Image (cartoon, rainbow, N blue to C red; front, side, top):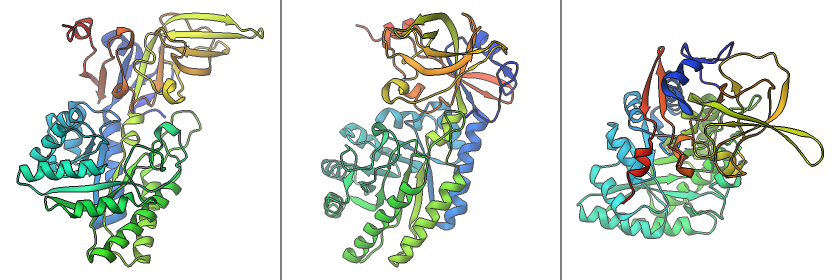
Length: 435
């Protein structure tokens, strides 16, 4: 739940720097990132893939959508893993951070012509194709640039992953990919084969996010490999790559489970080897995309309490509302799909009895609720600090300027030193686009 260098004691600290000192120097709200923990998690996933698949290990593609900035892109480049981007903006950040285009995979269900042109021109390793129209677009761009572009087809294997509907992506009724069951996947294969400027390398599937068991990944691998066998039988050659996506779940609340690299890789190796053996196929090059599983636990959000209010409900019960200086503008997930978080008093300890509390933001929305119900010390007062763990994935990356609130900074900490890697927005930034 907390990153490896966070200590929750008399006062929360990260790599030896207290929450109070961080708030004084950088203000609140702020995203506080444990750089050493990020690096360790990325290395662990990369090592697990290499150990599990050996010479058939492909790339660990860090999912940029979880969180990316140029400094994190530099870390990714130094660690030596790849990156999955799904917009021109994410591609620009990856390139600015020095990532080799040969380690970049471009995703997205509606890539613009300019995004495709940029990707092909810089030499991205793979473009993951998501629609029939996109096949023609990528082929046309590659032809115009005199290149043969490597592509994967994103497939929907028809799996109801055990996660929230908004982040499940592999059942039939979604905007992503080509359905295997309906025949759309095979039609896409035939279309790609018609273009000499495209090299079909294999298939890709991403079944959802925050998944806490391996069953869905094993079923996905079985269905993709079955299609690889059909391709071999039809065209006489084997496709060399399979990207099994990501979506591995992490701790958000006390008692939550988490999918570790070793557990995931054990399941994937078993599923891939057994199904390839069943169909007499060579094991393809296997890639994965752990975004949330790398960055999610490496970051916390630090808030300052602004108001404390007790409300009497219609049934006579009382509810305490603690308002902090952030809210849905830097963490939309609770409002968007009922994601749950926890929080701790970060600047001191308290022996006061806990009381049922709702932690809310400062925005003009009744639904601006960060934590719907938490038992927290009854003596919390304005000026106290609260820390919410595991906010690295889809916190800052989905942040907005709702109510014209400037977005928080990201502060990286390593070896007892803190530095800004994404600065806090200012009112001048908010006004800068106005004409």
